[in-house]
Length: 169
Image 1 (cartoon, rainbow, N blue to C red):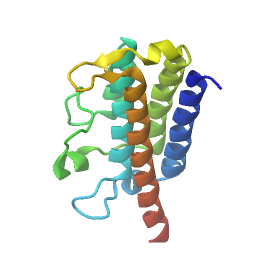
Image 2: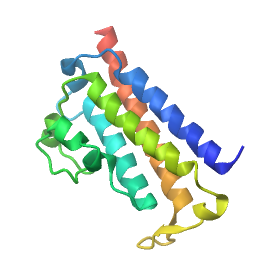
Image 3: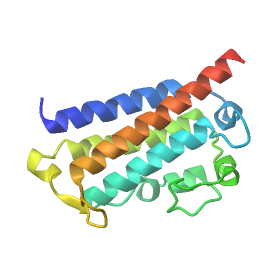
Image 4: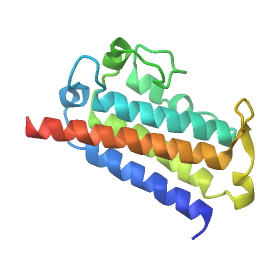
């Protein structure tokens, strides 16, 4: 297995977990927050997808699917299109409401497709490239991608947990 295939497998697992967490839920279920400080499924999936979109686009030197693919317009959130959810307070989390599960999975699938297309082109040498010199040590492409995978899997797991709460209610 190549590094590119390994990365693709990891991103495929994120997509599978996202779909399981979201499929079949109503807009109200997607917006449900276990308490006033908690994140909803809608926010968690939107955020993990926004971070993946932002970081992969930056690494690939391309535009984000969020804006170039018209997803920001389709979601019509009361947020700046550049926001990824990082540092959102409870009021901003509550503002992330979606019209359907299909909207969330549609955006995630578009980002997933762009991601696996990009990682499929990578060689081991590519993964050594520094993508952020502001850190000590500087962040390589490999570290950035593993960071995205780790963050995405954590948030997808949180969304799955909230779904479990909804199903047991």
